[in-house]
Amino acid sequence: MSLEALEAQLRRDFLAGLAGDRAAYRAFLAAASARLRHYIRGQLARTGRREPADVEDLLQETLLAMHTAQGSYDPASPVTAWLHAIARYKVIDHLRRSGRTPHAETLDDAAHLLGVEDHAATESALDLNRALDRLPTRARALIREVKVQGASVAEAAARAGMSEGAAKVALHRSMRQLARLLGARGEGEG
Amino acid sequence: MKTDDLLDLLAAAQSPVDTGALDRALSAAAIAGLFLAALLVILTLGMRPDLTAALLAGPVAAKFAFAGSLGLLALLLFRRALRPGVGAGSLPLALAVPVAILGVLALSQIVATPMEMRPAVLYGRSWTACVIFIPLYAVLPFAALVAAGRRGAPVHPGRAGLAAGLAAGALAAMAYALHCPEDTLPFVFAWYGGALALCTAAGWILGGRLLRW
Image (tube, rainbow over all chains, first blue to last red; front, side, top):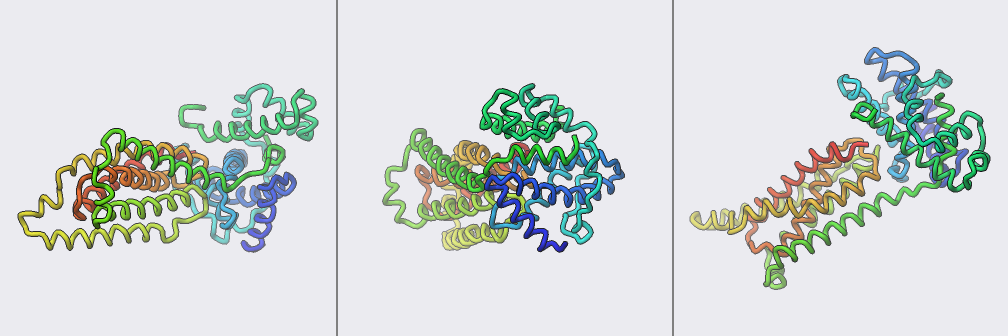
């Protein structure tokens, strides 16, 4: 897929996602994570780390950061540029925290154009699970319902005895908190 | 957790996002910062009594034009720095224009001044007050801008902080100009310029810490 075609696809799905379309947002996330996984794997490999679990850790942190930073997207600019800038920031941040030279390639060279879908089923090592443990019990239960048991937000809300609106707010807050917890690693917090 | 599971979770947590909120917060912060700094100058130092008349003379108007143009450009630069993937464009170059214009005008005024009068024209009576007060009055606008900026996602926090520092300094300089009794262009160039440089450097250092996310 050319960069133009990728941009067109990502843009269509992301703009719909920003308007609140969950299915379109899910499609955007899938396409974005395939591409970012390839980039992150390349960057980590340069520092001698080839564990798929490390790649998934950093990918998940980047996806959470992206999710909470959606309001920073300027609809007049390319989605790929936005995505790449965030991924590069997270990679540099990660390398700095793990004590390596903070230098990351930009994502624009041809080698990264095609994200190949693999390792998607790899468990992240620990980071996100550890961050999840630090959420309030109620939020964690909600996440388990939605996630592990594949319930819709409405079903999970009903089972937790909250309104659907309250469950959405709780989920939204939890994602922000997870992003914060992951971003704070190595700064004396985790 | 598998990444696919995280994607389901993020999609489930998705609600409509307002990408314009950041710009509105930034405008509100800039206006509030300018207003607060002006209020503080008027309450603590007082307005110069002849402000309206002095505004018609070149040098006082030059303070507002210099600080106003730099402030506006720095705000635009800050706004761009908060949005990943959006470059600075030609804004850094544009910042050089007001500096160059005022620099040339200030230099020509110095050259036209007799040697023994030059220190008075350059230092005036209050150059230390100018360099100290402008950064102090910039604290509130800077705090307002950084608070708004934390809604953004600066991928170069230091650069974003630098722009916020310059913008806050320029807002404070406009507020301080309500009081400042000096009426020469060399004074404005050297000391307003110096105060803004201090604010910019402080913003760069603080921004790297405060705007990380």
